[in-house]
Length: 247
Length: 250
Ligand code: SF4
Ligand code: FES
Image (cartoon, chains in turn brown, yellow):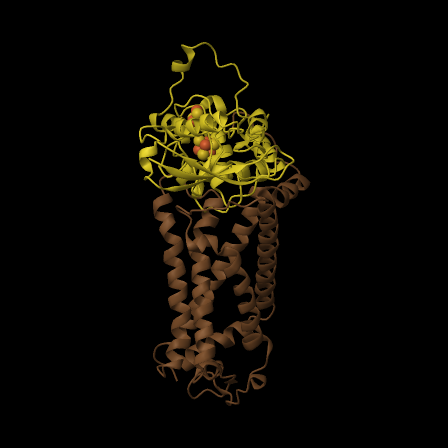
């Protein structure tokens, strides 16, 4: 049903004030930035899955080469992601501070009836994921291959081609091969990512009012299902390398 | 049956409180939880102690006055039941029962287990009504409303304003309450004229009262004595965002 009387949209100042200052607005910003990041996570995961299959080295290197060749577009994507991460963190801090203040005296006795572990651990998983992302960026984006100790030569873009590209595939194998500690840390962290998303995705949809009564039961399962998928997708590559399945 | 109660005692708003352990003897399993507290209070009075203060009124589960967090759950262990409708047969002889007031910055404790829930009244006063002329009683039936919509409105309207949703929420958010009040009119033609204005004003007041924000734990719907579903929160969010981004009326 629509409003009986409608008026022009509120001014930009009002919109910003409400989105930035109200409980629902802050949550909506957290939801939108979160969903954007979820989109990236899935793209990133699909990219990684090219480490499997025949001719994986060429496919994966060609994919990495393609991303690098995007030039300015790559920077647009990076800055968008950075903005989303900042927005996500700022709104998370705002929401957390407000929510802590809303209950100054805790109960002596609390029994959870429905709240899932994932929903109660969002703050903790979020902080660990931030540290993980920084470490991950350092290892694979900021540091040069040589700085990480990888000395593999450049390889042809296609079999027989004269165009040489960095062997990103080899670098990935080098990063996990024979390194159970690092591999398990990665697997643990993408596990936490799965836990974070299992609540995050459905919570975002609920916050944006997407879950209406008819879809609720279905969409409640979407979060855990996608969270599980993210975990399996991301954990499979380093585990396969450690196991010597990808080499 | 005999029980050991650990009850929150607090002299007034300004004085910090503490737990007091009280033995409840010879309690009948047929008593309601509040009747059990009546018995305990009478005993205390006979001995010259100050009885524990707690809120109650109808004792029929319809007014929303009773409260109490019982063993960590607002309104106690029985689902879809107010404290006044909870019976002692839900407990066993020898049980320890911890009884606390609603805990929220927006619900200050006035005395013992009694909290001040005026914050809900302030929110209601901002838009929990329609101010259009709806005509006389027969006119209500003159406007056709789809059964589905009427049911959704009626489900939301069954909120009794008890505040258990706030008490159960880790963030002391009152979103379930506000959303119930918003949704009840959003599904009816009479509520449309003020639809956007209502949601903006009520949420603004909710925030001003110092309630937290909803992080979708779902504890509120689990303890709500009227089983209000968090679908009302999704509806309210949608209305709020639409009113904020697209436009408002009246
Ligand atoms: S929504 Fe349920 S728990 Fe909250 S005030 Fe209304 S009846 Fe009480
Ligand atoms: S006393 Fe009225 S609902 Fe419990």
